[in-house]
Image 1 (spheres, rainbow, N blue to C red):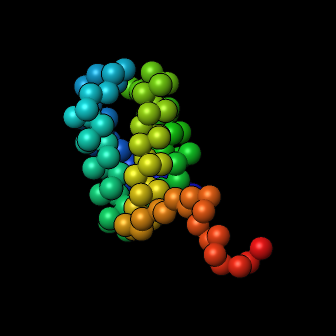
Image 2 (spheres, one colour; image 1 turned 135 degrees about the horizontal axis):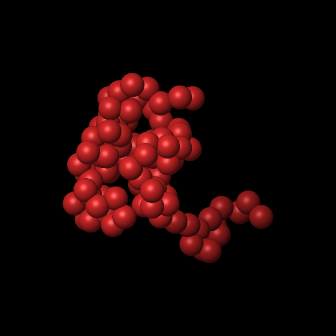
Image 3 (cartoon, rainbow, N blue to C red; image 1 turned 90 degrees about the horizontal axis):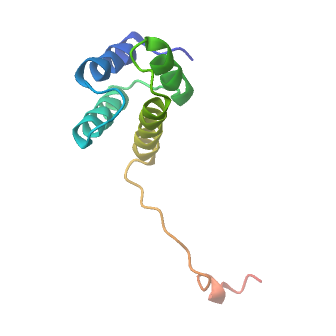
Length: 102
């Protein structure tokens, strides 16, 4: 699924606002998270592989670890957004012992 024009515009925001494309600062990462969240909140959906491909082909992102980091952030934000505030519960080994369903 190709990226929408709105998504590409948002990705360009990242490109123009991140100055050191080899070393993301905490401020850069916060900006990147906010951009991906805004994309999702606007009703857009993105394929994480397409995000990675866009950054690899954009031209100014030549440092592979940075592209991988941005891709990971996009995936993390998407997963959290899709959970919609659901809390994950970790089950202990003893949970369900009295359910008599052996």
